[in-house]
Image (tube, rainbow, N blue to C red; front, side, top):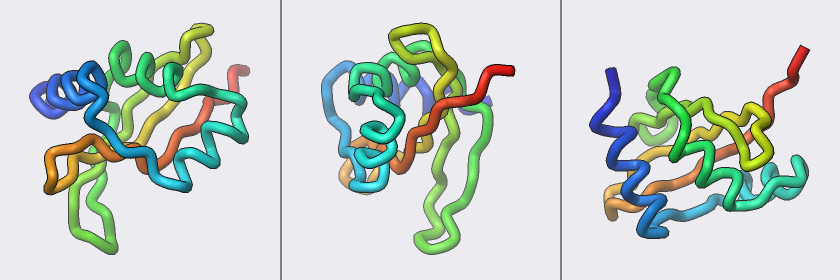
Amino acid sequence: MHNRVLLRMRELVRTSEYIVTVHAAEEIEADELTIFDVEHAVLTGEIIERQKDEQTGQWKYVIEGVDLGGEPLRVVGRISRAAKLVFITVFGLEQG
């Protein structure tokens, strides 16, 4: 459904054209992840939801993928007006 957006996001990851927000960086550190885990989740994952940001009115996307260790990971991101991928937040999923 959002295939073009996902392909663009993957291209931006491959070319390192992304920005990590302070919040996303804190979440990456708190979950003992690396930026490579986040990149892997985008490169191997799928968009599962599109949300409209209440503050900016811009679309953001929830990507569900896996980290380098195969653990499930969600990444929330958007493409900025400057054509960069912005990682808004990142969080691991509990396996039950």
